Length: 173
Picture (cartoon, rainbow, N blue to C red):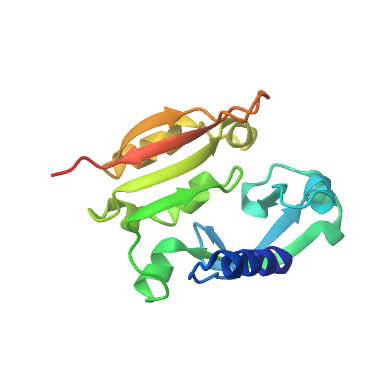
């Protein structure tokens, strides 16, 4: 939901002939005003992650520096669907750097629908652990919504970040 990122995404969509709508808010478990904390890594490196919703934070360096905090509107995915802003999802890809649980909690009704049959979640074990969240809870949430889950490693990760892709597929009827 950061303006510079939205501008880059718009430019990329134009270059690639993609038709999509970019919405200027963060998906979460509430419809509320939140604080997006930007880390030094994010501020100094173009195209990288390094931000976290304050509700998913455990005391990052950004909390101590107000210039690294941006007020943003968070929205529940289910609210966006019920208000007709977006259609019911059929497939999702979620990469939110430790806020996976917030996004999924805000999408529970949509995830339970039969037409939502495929989901990929970049699951950040270490970031979730830092918040006191068991990374397996992400898998259990998908399974509770009817998905069969499997883990896929990230070939480009040589570090010990504990990050992997979680794929959820609903069995065909």
